[in-house]
Length: 561
Image (cartoon, rainbow, N blue to C red; front, side):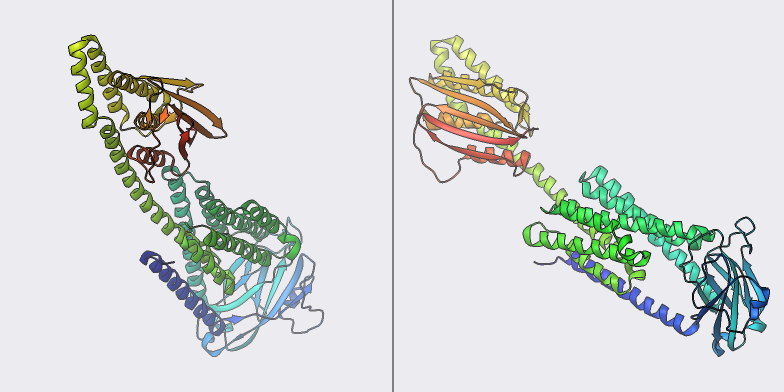
């Protein structure tokens, strides 16, 4: 399968962006490992005593956090020579209210320490504190925290403590917020785009689903970033985390549903149900938010890839950009925390491109359809107002004028009536059966006068308001007149309708003497009928014709409109 230039360019751009962010990620981690002073080892002590602010004794200090709402934490941080030259700050991420001590000196507080929920004033999850310059000398330093956490029972969160240049900490936080807002903005714009796309271009359900997916991801990014934008009291950390978790599960399922609705594989419902059951079962399998989220996206990406691959090998109209997008998503699991949103963004970028191609295709298709409609309009007029038809009619009129003037007048009136109907219907894709039958009866009256043959039109159980392509039945009748001889100076046309499910079957019989003309090619009339059916119903139609014992039979099935 050849890849067009726009697809190739899109792939290169996405891969380049992924590579750039990978380099930034590695560089970012490299800076953290070299320039940051991390507090890796932490010890805890249950209870409260101000003397513990510089307790160097190892007695009664534990490596595990106590199941208590009042406790102390201590850790050692090493300041190297390079860091000692800077204006340092300490960043703490912890669930609780606390006082911060650096080598026994209090350098700040977050909230207000208390012995009950009423006396404790909630602190924020993230806080920055400036380290006095006279305390930031090279060497090991003891950091102790006096912690109260009466507003939550969630004690499984491991505190994050590090020392860095205070200006760098603030700059880094600002960049993360700016990045999050920009990324959220992309998905909000995508939500609006897909909403408008569905309203004005395509009402397919999968566009509604991908729009909902974008809106859910937009909310996830905002909830993930709100901890840095708005100072949230620490008791809201777990509800926020739970909301992020549930929204990512929803996003994973919506993404899977999008590909199922787009390609409609035969096992689509089974996959959707399995995906849903798998996602809601994650909490009982891992009982860990991070692992749950990672497995949820892995499950969704894998099922999406299976759907696209299956469609790739079974369908001819596979969107190759989806195959590329779903394959690229697996790179997420190399650096999950950093690349998750970029995997979602990759799918959206390729969907944008796919839709732009689809719009271009639809525009071209509409232009071709318009040209085809105009050609068919001209064809209908040419077919019924052709020179030999007019010449023969005029010859008959002259003959009737000389012998029976009243009959000549009737023939002229019938000709005018047929031409009037033709002009009114020629530019329409579908017309009511009633109008088509009026045209047929008028034409048979003209042919009866010209050929001195009795043409009879029998309508059996007709729904006069069924919509059909103009000239469809008329063309069948014209073919019947051309290819059958009268039986006892008459030809009978019988038209039956049968309704099955959402289809209508037209059964047209021409009762006469078949001339047994054989041809392997479709005549002008049959080509016209097929073109009109394709114009109005695409490939959702059926046509079959053949000789019967007395005449000819034509069967056509079309959808009900």
